[in-house]
Image 1 (cartoon, rainbow, N blue to C red):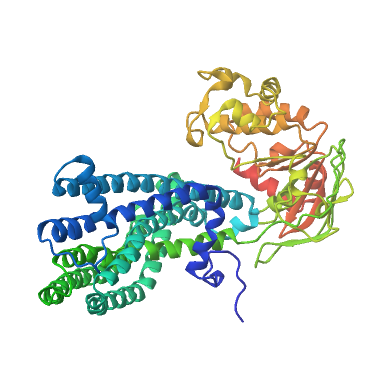
Image 2 (tube, rainbow, N blue to C red):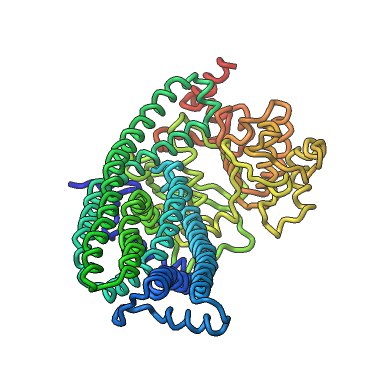
Length: 615
């Protein structure tokens, strides 16, 4: 039986929609900029018209009409002969001068219209892709934590950065092809009217170019997909190792990581070399066919001139239009790398954007009372992570309002999982977890997180000032409230000692302040929000002993009127908790005050004795 698809990066999650369908979906993000696109297309049409008229003036007017005076009446000139005559009479000048001035006019207009197209079209495309990138970022921000338990952050980063860039290259190349296809269509119609026989004699070469391009696409399609995959793995490896550079250097894994990175680079290089070998065979073939087309025009066209079936200017015009005829087909081949890389990128972007995974939100969520007491109750709760073993088993516990509960146990016993369930990071079975007698599954996750504050050992500081990192952009938290929170957690002295105090900017990852100071900021951040339920998960592990002692005093005031859950490996810090529970393999095995648990001489006593011996 096929295993269920658990993330959008799983090969089984590949979309059944084709590349064309995915590109068509982009119209949603381009729609707000449709007038810019329409204007750009109009400029492209006008530039194409000027591109067509320039060679007509040169061949039909200057060569046939003025120099050789051998103009056949049935050969079209799109009104350029009449316009040249009008300019000659109006300017009272020589016909050759008038024709030259007309040629320069069309050349100037082509440049102006091309400039208009080449500025407006990319601007609209990039604006649409910018919106797509923002929507993709918003989508991944709202995916639940369970999603990030299964996927690598580097994979998500690749979708938002590199894959969007590939789409940008595709759309810009599409713009270039649009500017080529319009002259292509006009050139065919004019060449048909000039000499249909000569166009028919050229058509086999055009079919050969189309066949070569199709074959090139067939051979390189899977290669470009593998190139994209190897590039994604490179990004993932870089992100994972550079983000944990301190651990890498402490473990002296530099050489090992270099070997692994070299292997990834080798795989990428191997696929790139395959593509290069095919590309270097394709391009000369196409160029030689284009040269052969020139020879065909000269050979057959020359005979038509000698037989007076057409004019010399018409053959010159054919030669000039020959480039317009073959260049769009050739561009498809030249842009194949961009197109197929973008095809893979587009597939991956929409696979992630279409990935539907969210916490259950009731249609009519229950409203938490304004005076939340913080009563938490677990009833026969069982929980497991996706495709994993049970983490919490038949768990029953009542936490009274305002109680300080400490949770201890060996690594993997389920301590952090319990707190994450209270924060509504995961779905649980109905009627198994209650807050103030309300089933947590009937409460919107965002409402719960406004009333629950959590301080983790692994925390995150954001770019901005100290004040920004305390308020987190919440307008309800004033500067005075932030100062009061910093005072309560013993952070005011070190903040005032900073160059600009609360207005000091925090550098990337908070490297301009110490680890303990960063932790104090997180304490102040949570206290400023004034949550009714407080969770401390190894919250003082990164703080020195003196600061921890000060915070322990502050915690007495902070937790006095809040339901507080404390996870701590250092049992000395939780001796004064109202109650301590011991977890073992997801099961509650002991509960009581510090002295009571020691008297039981069970698991807690064993943990305490082990720490006492270590200390």
